Length: 383
Image (tube, rainbow, N blue to C red; front, side, top):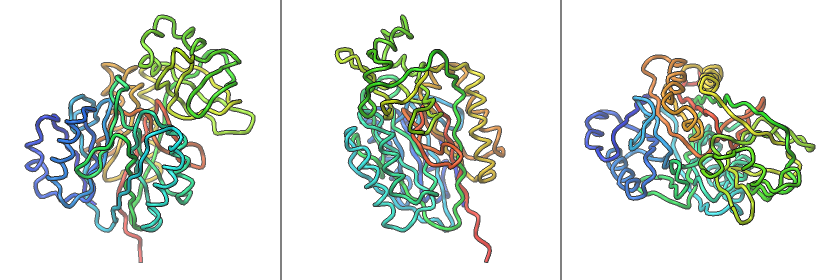
């Protein structure tokens, strides 16, 4: 297997063919700024440059490329496999109610080509229930299938996101690539570095990702009391103060983080990136730069432990991490890069939600505020 990464200004892709001359890609991950017309241009140009490759990706809240994090860039990660087979599928995903069934349908479609060695999905970042989608997808796939991906983003605007498949962009479609073959090795890791604080609150009313009541009080009002002056900047300021799932009576998985994606001032509700169940226990969270950088390094170390070095590395980090790190944003990328051998191709994006392993069983979940990483390489099985 061979791999390369490439970063260029989104308005200038003329050098793409020259820089990748002689490189035959089977799969190209493509991440670009959240302008719909620009996304169409990028999808067409990248697909034309690699006519034999599968091109897949999404809009971002910042691109991760050769020189670190940036805006207005196209970040590509190309993989040229020796034996792994690439198959793609897409399904409509345009509402919270459809999220679970859409995930299950996507998994069923991917299974039609046989059990995948790994699945990489990208889904719309707004108006959907990422938690339900991931659980639907997970229910359809074999439990051991590594599933790593993310939710498309629109910077800090929260207006419109899109996914990319081939030479097309979609505002209402979940897309995924399935990788098939016994030689593929995928390493995964996910960590945050955020810290919970304040009293533990009980979710007393919620419907999917819409949180109405905490401790029998209007959730938005209680949340605004925490934020103080920053409440006027919602929903973007909500990325700085996510909620931690710290337990509940029916033994749901804990340690996950949920970001605030939207507010309804009239209804007094918060819409999160994923569902919360009534009875869930949550706490507010905050972070400092060094903890976030340490979390990124930990995620990379998890990847090394599960698969070794890897021939190519895909990074999916959260827009909230970028907002906190500010001018130190490249430090978390460098912390990841330092774990892998010099010259390892690395690319990725800042998202509205990360899909990756969680817990001792490594089942995939929707994360927020995490650095989620996957490495890809091929190691032929011995006869």
